[in-house]
Image (cartoon, rainbow, N blue to C red; front, side):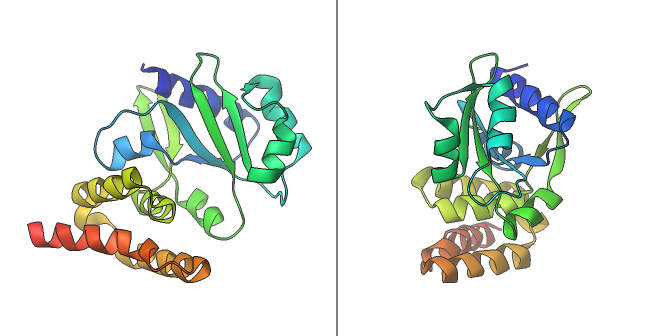
Amino acid sequence: MNPRFEAAWEIHQFLAQHKIRYAVIGGIAVQRWGDQRFTKDVDLTIASSLTEGSSPMVDLLTKHFRSRSANPLEFARKTRMILLTASNGVDLDISLALPGYEDEMLARAVDFEIEAGKSIRLCSAEDLIIHKAVAGRPQDVSDIQGIVYRQGEKLDGGYIRDWLGQFSELMGNPEIQQHFERAWEKYRQSL
């Protein structure tokens, strides 16, 4: 098994043991839904009823995984992120889910078999597009194109457009929705 899958399996087992819902949202999800590309870490979102970071959640995770921040609780409260390292040295970047959209994203997560008998939870292709569009970096825009080309008509465009419209309005940035629309238009023209 490749090191990223090993790390994803390790965090999956830990979160499952503690009944914490999660979904992988980064490069591993891109490999499943879009183009194959290298990824050096495991990015995931975990369910959290927290508003500002939580000592119990941070303590639970940092007792099992090595923290990459000097003060993980303070870092989680400022950024809603917990930066850890799996036992094999692969970085784990964990975001604490906010109520609303991310609750729905976690509910839509699907199983992804990384090896016979070993599955992890991935965000859906639609939710990966939403995450990538909100982030909007050049690699994210490229990832969106790969996902659209690979998934095509299987995508729930209404779901994507609804959430991207909300994020565009909330953030005052129409470009968020356009990342998807441009990729979708290119896909339709290629048919």
